[in-house]
Image (cartoon, rainbow, N blue to C red; front, side):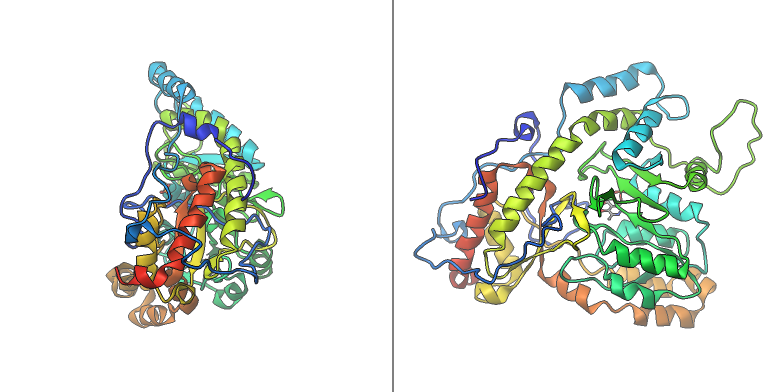
Length: 471
Ligand SMILES: Cc1ncc(COP(=O)(O)O)c(C=O)c1O
């Protein structure tokens, strides 16, 4: 038990169901909007040495074998909304000011989000992807440049680099944290490296001290992909503040959402201006009669509807985050008692995770060699939705195909591109992708009983793993 039953406000507020039906297939965001919660808040809770498997007689039969399903109700749905959101959208509608260049909602949201993130500046964008494109564009990154990124991320991180015709350089994953292995970044830096782009995957953090030390020593800008990490902290500071800038996503699955949307935070005024300009076709704030000649850029502006809705959604972010924190601690405690469940562990400096994903490695040896896919099928049958997470990005056929892309061959030469493909080995990440299991952030908006039922379902499957393997 983790504590008393705790019915969250989210359960009463939410009218929609967010119950995934087929989550045992490999993850793509469009099929399974990527969410779940990262274990631990730097608390260092890991599988305990005293962990002991249940035996068949002490737990019931799994649902997949004809036993009683552990859970019959869905976890809280997403997004959550009420009259505050109705009002925000209607206000934007009736104002007749639907674009940021003529309205005030986006500006107000930028101020509010900068406040929450304790950053000096915020530039809102149409999505997390366009926030990434804007940061890279504002840095002037282009053909011939290299950008360092992890392979354990959503494809947007990679695509943003490739859109600028820069070369994405993968650095392998740390299996304990699921984050980029900070110790390996230095070896990937060379004269062409123009940015280090770590990702706060699942809402936790990589070792930001080590990353910042490398960035500073090699004088390379550090920009953070914090698209999954709203309110996460490294040593008490909200992520996105460690280096030059960081960005967030407000896409439908994210902990703060307007369906789509994004934001960049920075403490560098000049960089904030450059980001604003880039996301606005190379222009600063338009002044009537101003000369239209600007810099390189595009229209990545957020709408007033998104801005208004995000202001309303912000009013419940802190409460939702607290609920996730409490449930993640509870689930961490419960699952660390089960052999073969190796929880993703935040580095010590991570003082808060956003718990966008709750991730663990499944060790089938502790489950009578029951394959992961069958374990997940059995878990879903218990009423616990889960996903196998990302496939290895660096070996994806689209990503590998970059070596044969005619534009890349023209820019970098065939030989360099062939070497690039050869170099893209991330064996730790390959193994992680084969073992990972995720729960969504909405799983952590449930009650303590929900957390206990997740653990109960896993224990049931473990006790009967040999029989489950035969189904
Ligand atoms: C790590 C990461 N980076 C970037 C993005 C892109 O954000 P968006 O979907 O808002 O464009 C996402 C969204 O899923 C993400 O998870």
